[in-house]
Amino acid sequence: MTGAEFRLCDIALDCSFRTGDARVEREQALAIIDLLESNTFTPLGHDGGPYRLKIETADGRLALHVADDNGVHVVSHYLSLTPFRRLLKDYTRVCESYYDAMCRAGPERLEAIDIGRRGIHNDAAELLRERLSTKISIDKYTARRLFTLIYALLVRNAEHRILPS
Image (cartoon, rainbow, N blue to C red; front, side, top):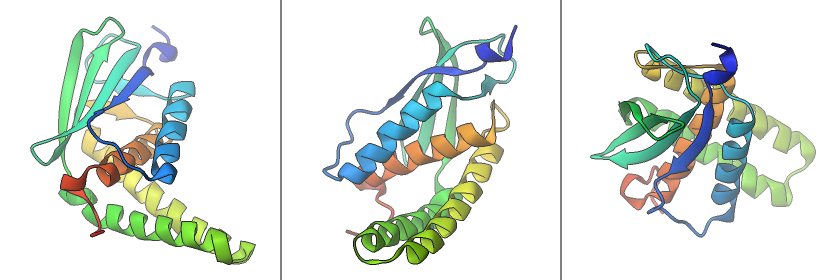
């Protein structure tokens, strides 16, 4: 087996969530493209993939369903969103600040906001790696992109909206 077999080949988000926010849709599309281009995804105790991942919310939790390339179920992992709430709120606020600053602020202000955004993103990615570690091993890059997808899913899902409208 080579490391290339422990990767994602397909990613799907629950399609019942839609938003009119082009920024969120763009972030989601870019994260999926980046993830499919390069990722490390290893369900523990499984012989190899590639794998298909479906991300959805179920009963107030995040559900990650993993299947092999032929669609045979490998593992499902349900994550409580509680440990992510503070990071998601902080990330939402800093992203909104960044989008607002793009219209008015100079490059120094944008850079400062972006540094803060990357810090929160890294913290959230590390938390995601820890929370998945009992069933799925992922690298930092994969965790960062998965967090972006989780953020996009939750922002689009009114039931789990992070900040009030």
